[in-house]
Image (tube, rainbow, N blue to C red):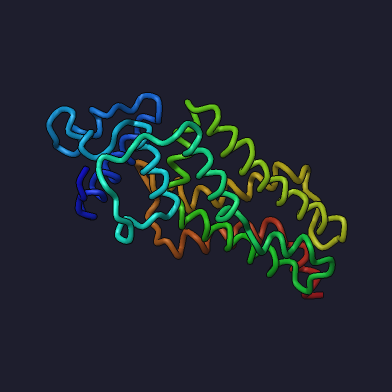
Length: 237
């Protein structure tokens, strides 16, 4: 066992992340990471014991673990069965919350619904942008890891859509927002619009040129205009 420089760990994580994003968890091979790093065959095992250990490390960095403040001793051991999913479950419970959405559901008489909804969208956008690499990794790996898909899409994303849908239903029932055909698909429209501008545009092979600020302002403006037009009109009357 030995200590490896932070710079080298960053290189390992960067190479492994690119491989997992390109191939997914199932098809990714340790040899792919070794090749990406320009190492000799099998050299990746100086850093981690297994693909499971490498993926666990990549997931933790994607969730915000700072390698510059951690002292990692190589090779990193293979995690216990279920440890990576347990870590993600705890992290999503902590970092996946949208406090402004929870506050809105508890507030029966907001003064300005458009401002309220704008705050929710900006907070969701900020979370998505902050963890965009980790989210992309979960999206890609969920395709061939059913337990991860159940946690990520089946539980967390479904819960977010459900909360947004309940929020829309509440404000529509109060006649503060215009009716929509179905609140759940509209909530998913909000989530996916944010996901495109905060996340997916970075992986577009032919992206539309825009700064991060323009991307955020465009997404927020479009969603507020399409969702809150009636409330804004009423306040002007």
